[in-house]
Length: 300
Image (cartoon, rainbow, N blue to C red):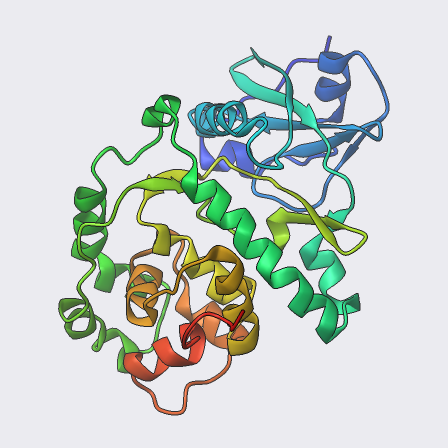
């Protein structure tokens, strides 16, 4: 049986390919009908028509605990992949799960009409609201265990982070003052997907069939999830965001959403500026309105 290769460092993991891992994968599963998916940060494979195998190299071994916990907790509550099997081999972790029907919303998006997109938004909002409403003691295994402490740590390194992404100084110099004037309060802690985007939602026949990719899940303020919603689902379209919020059942604060976008673990504003509508003025206040300004929820 072909062993899995070492992958305890970024260099070792970065040198691997999904095709190169196939002999070890087929040996693990004892079947040959395995095809690698091209997207995703971790190696993922279609197994026949109905299953998906996800690998967690030693470098990211802890992420299997998060994803497994989420899938077990969400079973029967939210349309997510059903966990079929799990294990470890050669220091790698793996999960074998159900394959959700349909295709990703990202793949389908260019083919959808405006009416189709509007129709989907309330359903997507309901999906996120369902996730945020889940209350299960097993979620205590997810970090961070101190949300206020997490926010404070992100705040302490926020300027350094954005300079590292090569964000223009015109924006960087505004960040401390903007964050100083946004009250994030003491929100209740809820389960977060953290990457609620078209890439991770499946649809089939114009209906949402599920949400997947939970390895970066956390517990924290609900509006932290609206960072990805505004950037990668509604993408600055106010009408789509209003409809999403109608399904979610609650309004959001655009300034808090931008604050969490600035503090987000994966924040990359130079990339966002290349994809999102340009604000009318080069200020963070204007940016919050341009990207998360939705007014009230859509009328019933």
